[in-house]
Image (spheres, rainbow, N blue to C red):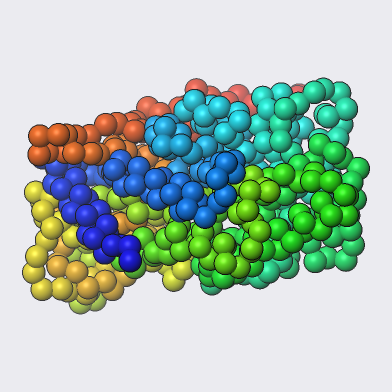
Length: 456
Ligand SMILES: *Cc1c(COP(=O)(O)O)cnc(C)c1O
């Protein structure tokens, strides 16, 4: 048995220590009312668990690249940490590719997937030797043209949508019948088109699918991987050669946002794949994975000061500095993306006391800007702190500029070796000057001086 509870309790204890140390060291306070914290030990643990889970099931010598889905936490120091923990990067835009390169992730550890790659992006990726998964026939046509005019070391593949169905959250279900991603495998003629595409292009050596993210049951993910494996076997058999040598099985392991447990585990998923897709791990195929949320979610915390504590209609409301700008999905779609909230006192100590049903509101000027509604917690008072837990992926690094609220600073934390907590800046807080510059500050008169010819 894996001691998941022990690991979760350890993570919670580290988080409590970090919140207190952040207040003590002034990273959080009246003048810095919101901060993002990242648990460096936790990130290392998750990366190690991922590697160990697949090492335990794949045949010795099988090439395996775990490419972290950069969109989950697009922060250069995080990408660097993961790279040093043996991971690569899965990128889906020129910006994400630039982040991976800035972190020092080499091209042969980088995979480019996106549904809207421009010719310039494809040219750059092929020139660098980055792996590319073509999303559709038109994109494959562009790659054909580039391959005719230049040599490339890039491993190339096609993304397919196995159309195995969606999960409980439509927005993160990528394998529905009408999903926008990849070649829809069950559509009429699609399978034959894919087989022919490989027959005509000896340089197509990979096959890719990403069956979905949060809300998808493990069994459905495994079914999607099974479809990809079966298709690769069919293609290689029909071509009479082992042309497809690598399967990219995507990411998508769901995260438990209701407790400190990191379940399901990578080990459970790897064992399920081993059982349900016999042959996948026997060494004939190299593997690429693209996990995002499950690597980082549990290791990030947004901590925000309670600026005011008030009451409305008999309901206590804590007005904090964390709302839609850092927890966009939760605020707009609270039913699908609930977050746990932890209460801390003004010194950053876990708050005790009877639980009171209250709203935890954000700073933005619209009524729905609530981090949590009707939540039972020790009563939050002015000067206390509310922490949004499990926000290390798809949250604080995905700033939403509503009300021109500043991007908060993000600090990594780890034990300092002498009983305390040490912090390192991952990203500085955005300044008012930066907000002005990004809002056209250099062009203040651009519109007042623009006139149609002949008008005055
Ligand atoms: C978003 C995405 C991932 C990562 O998904 P998670 O649910 O964060 O693990 C992997 N691959 C592709 C192609 C994606 O779009």
